[in-house]
Amino acid sequence: MEMFKSTVFRFIPDNTLMMMMRFSLIEHKPLHTCYCFVFLFLLSFSSSEAYDALDPNGNITIKWDVISWTADGYVAVVTINNFQQYRHISAPGWSLTWAWAGKEVIWNIKGAMTTQQGNCSRLFKGISLPHSCKRNPTVVDLLPNTPYNQKLPNCCKGGVLTSWTQDPTNSVASFQLTVGHAGTTNRTVQVPKNFTFHAPGLGYTCGPAKIVRPTMFISPDKRRVTQAIMTWNVTCTYSHFLAQKSSPTCCVSLSTFYNDTTVPCPTCSCACKHSNSTCVKTDTGKNASVECSNHMCPISVHWHLNLNNKNYWRVNVTISNLNYRMNYSDWNMVIQHPNFNNNLTQVFGLKYKLFTPLDNIHVAMVWGIKFYNNVLIEAGNVEFEVLFRKDNNSSLSLKKDWGFPQGIYFNGDNCVMPPPHAYPWLPNYA
Image 1 (spheres, rainbow, N blue to C red):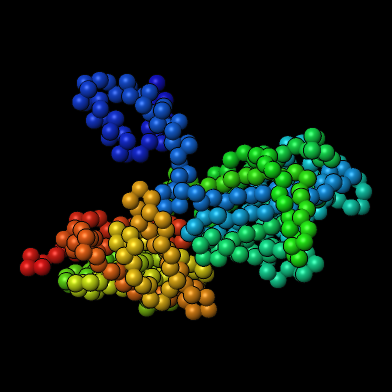
Image 2 (cartoon, helix red, strand yellow; image 1 turned 90 degrees about the vertical axis):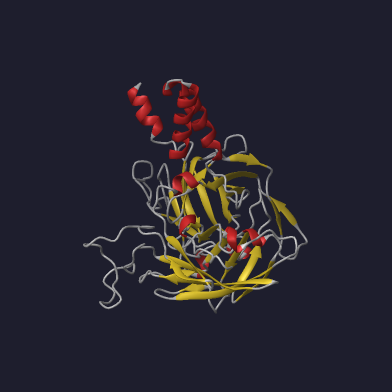
């Protein structure tokens, strides 16, 4: 029983444990009577851990189209679509792993490559060996400088996929593989299993492959339609539970026109600075990657409320890259703010899009303009202004701290906000 308690409670958030203890005290029942609640919580968590209130339908969809048969298998085109509104796959890019259901091998692959060939000598004695004999191959994208005869449409981007909102045409990747030692009919082909989609950081979980209606292909001149022999899909979703195992990467500081106090990023937001910390000091050169600070985050966002009149709010936002060894290409930032409910008038210096409100969540996404500020360079920053319109029925008030965002996400990562009690206070005469 003690082992069960120590194992189960490790996976329960602190607020849930507090609720269980409160139930135990109020109802005058021992804590072990709440184990049924714990079990139900864990069961429900597995189905909801990948839910994202800001992007409830966002996912990575992997489509596997069998397009022709070979003597001992088939040729398939695999397409990876990033249907996430604001999360993109940055360098060094994606990788895809699965387990063969039988003794399949990859004879040839185009538009991508496997990371390991595996041991092919036991099965193949001829001159020509398969590209991969691994039971669980891992496939990665090719680089942009790949020779033309090895490319396919939508391949060779170094594994980088933009978000669906920013650029749908660059949110897709594809590769073609010739599979051997496999079935040669719809009845004998075995669907691979245990798909895993890897991207920088933690966060993706994939469901099982499901056979769906075969894909239709339209010719470039739109005069002919062909059909895949067989198609199956795999859906991978971002899991906040897995992402929480990694450290934060950004933080937020606040200031206003009505208070001289600047609320800094919370101390130790991303890491703690110690006497032996390896970080970049502005007067000693680049001996490490991240600039020395109290928060030790590679990205900091400063929100300054600089104007409040009868009809408008005006906010200045500065995104600083404190990472001296990394540029952030095609970056984006998601801002959660109550005044985004159709009252956003203009964003100056960036592109933006309002998301459809869900459960009273009002969200806007901003990103850089190509060839202007879509790359956040190392030790650099990007500045922009946001103009909000006030309406007569608005209940927004500076007294309720509604001049500040409720949450900020940089490249999909939740930035650490200052605690509400630390927000700049409003003078009594205001």
